[in-house]
Image 1 (cartoon, rainbow over the protein chains, first blue to last red):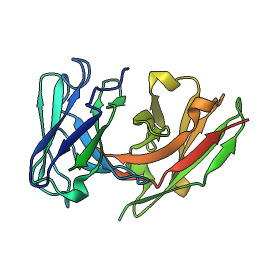
Image 2 (cartoon, rainbow over the protein chains, first blue to last red; image 1 turned 135 degrees about the vertical axis):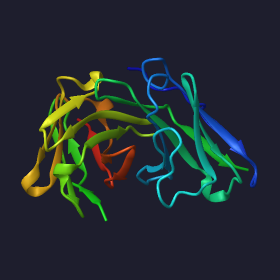
Image 3 (cartoon, rainbow over the protein chains, first blue to last red; image 1 turned 90 degrees about the horizontal axis):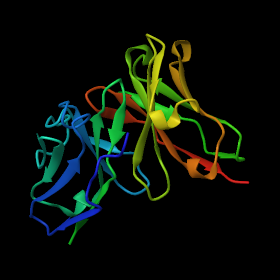
Length: 110
Length: 116
């Protein structure tokens, strides 16, 4: 099972919107609406931001949104803020009770 | 409030095994699905496997098949991950996480260093 493909880095200015892509295959992202997204600050455990493709856990800002088209899922951060600077990873169910993470994306707020 | 508390850092020799624990509080581990995820230095997250304690069944990523064993003790609300035949590439922070729709609660991470 290969890791899902994410861009290594994405940057934006405060207030702008950015989108992080997560490309898998028809065996994972394309087959299930079970993509989740995680934010991770240096030295910290990951934090769930989006689950089941587009759902936000309680307490997560509505500036974060998720979507999917075919084998590619996306995370959009609108109204970019300094505190959004972190690493972001996607994860998809891959069948047979297994999961696969993405390669990770570093978000920089300019 | 669910909390997952992991055991402390470990230093291991190549070829040996390590067993990391993950104790749940604020709920009963029997009703959880617990996954183990690792992160090598400067690298991304990597899913290793999961267990559903109430069923006692575990599933593993193909990469770790035969080398990892995930178990759970319902009486102590603790999950375990044992990785054998350690090599330098296994140096990483190992996390346990509860799986619902996504991985919603995470342990603090356990650093395992493999070095001769």
